[in-house]
Length: 526
Length: 87
Image 1 (cartoon, chains in turn cyan, blue):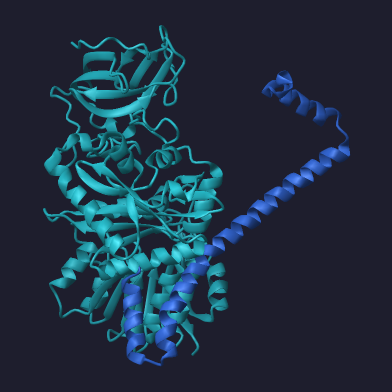
Image 2 (cartoon, rainbow over the protein chains, first blue to last red):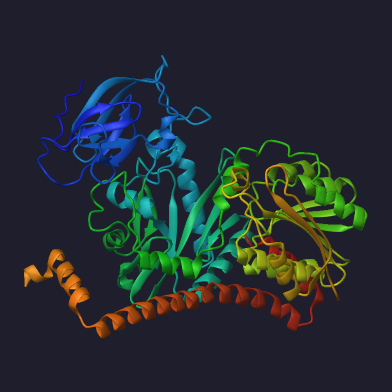
């Protein structure tokens, strides 16, 4: 079918529903080669012949399985081509049938738009599937955020794949799916870099942007595009210390400051954008000396020491966040359950309806809404705003209800101190409800929950608590709920250390599945 | 020299040391390995204080000015704004 010469990278023994079996016979070089996989002439995935394959189980030399995210599409017919990415030589080009499907295989998202596997292994609308009109809003957003950062004194520039695409090809990389920005702070100590990042976040919020914090030095900035869709762009913080350039989340290399400052320019899709002074040195620092050779299956090999430094200095505030986001993503448009949890009933029975309630870890906000509908002044707090999105919109149409939602991350001390002070400052006693929160967060988050409760409840307030205290080993339901059993006596001790007294406690279970739970009411002496 | 530096020979030298080296030396190596692991843990603990210190400093810095001015309206505003801008 193709006029291009056959490749010497490897030959293909077999393509089937499990994956691709390769033969190494006839290879003219021992070097590894990156190969694109095309379905009906569109690249959908790339892999390295040696790095990503394993010894073949049933004949042939090497085997590589289809990525998990592609498997669900493999039902029907497709012309499958394997081409060496760099020289475009052909390893394989044949019509195949997968499964029992009769139609052509269409690898598309829920809206029917073509998607492919990006270099993080995610199924994305890669740039090669979009035309200039479709990438224009992204480039506009890049310029807007760069301008906003410039206005607050931060010299940011495109980084990672976006910089690589600009410098190497003058355009967005086909296999990439989003744009990344970075800046190199003039601060030299992590604590100052983090403080500066907090200030950047505040200033951007003041300018009207919504932000989400990924670490002490990394944020996502959301921009509304002309078609009304909202895009989040990552802004990675960096700094110099001890002769090393460090940029979240992969770069730590000895590099003179002159490689970055003063910033120069680069051209991306015809637009002139800021760039590090020595883009060659910066890209070597990012991708190694072979950055000029295209690699759609690039994987960072960040040294353990770099990874640990970044973890210790900046990270640890988003434990399990991806799992919660994934869980809520499919429920965004659905109304949460109306039936209240038993703990909410407990609370109203004891406190009455004329009460100020804070539902900590409110999740989808169903219980918060139930309390508000019964007259309570209810505030729901959670670290995954996607969860309470539906009820927030629902509440906006019912202004007579006292029902609000906001973000609280128990893994960030300043969230806890800020909210603790605010709740303590607002007039009247406050009642906190935390249902399956102490058993959903790591111990640091649990201790911060007690801190928040102490601050908010110190004068007359109470905390209503429910947690899983026991479950059989490997209980799948418990794993799916993203919770883990916590010793209730440990909870009582930790609360006592914060001045809290358990005034009511009910241990229940084991239920039919072997799970035990505990409900407590905690009060503080003013 | 090249042969001595090859991984196979380094491994056999190590094995020889383990089998025939003085017991005292082996005890000292084990002690130092343990000490290095302890020091790594301590370094990591210190690094983690950077984040905590930044969080504390940020809260104090933002709240201290209105408090020190005894400006109640500004305190109210800062408390509301601070939590809304956390991100």
